[in-house]
Image: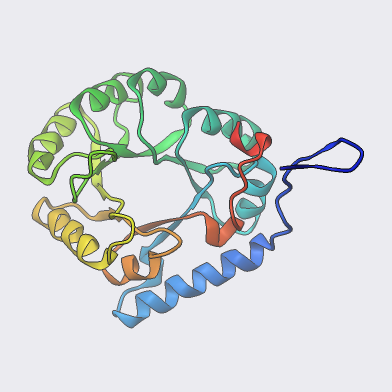
Length: 236
C-alpha cells in the first residue's frame, strides 16, 4: 500500500485473472497426474481453496464448474456462503476450528476436513448429526499445526464413529519445504490400515504429487485464483 501525490492511499487491487482458464489448466494437470499412475481422474475432487478470495471471484470458479469450495476461517465462510447460496456450492471446512464456531457453520458444511480431537467431534455431532468428516493428521507432529498424531488416530476414529459421524478419510498438510511425497505416502498407508477411502492432500505447489500418491481431494487456491492480496476486502 502506498500514498499517491495527492495524498490518497492506493488500495491493493487483485490483478485480472482468467479463472475459467485456470480451472481448465488445473483439471488438465490433475488428469495427467492421474493417468501417469493408472488412476481414473474422475476419482479426484478439486476443492477450490477460497481463503481471502472475495465472493465475486469465488462465483467465477463455481461458474467454471468447481462446486466444492474449501474455507479456513469461520467468519469468511459464513459471509461467502450467504453471498453465494444461489450458486449451490458444497462447502468444506479446512482450517483449525474452535468448538464455539460449529453451531453457526453447521447448516453450510458438507465435509468437515479438519477434525483432530474428540471435543470437536462431539460438537459437530451435536450441531450437525451424521456429518461427513475427515480426520486431520499432523504426520510430522509440528507443534504450530493442528492435527492429531498418528498414534492417536485409531482412538479418535472410534470416538467419532461412536458419535454417529461418518469418517470418510484423512487429511494432512506436509511440512513446508519438505518433499511432500513421503508424507502423502504415509497418509495413504494410514488410510488403508483403517479402511478409509478419502484422502485430502495436495495444494497448489504439490497437488500433482498428491494425485500420484492417491489423493481423492486436492485443495487448490493460488493456481485457480492467482496470488493472494490481503486487502481489507479480502481479509474480512
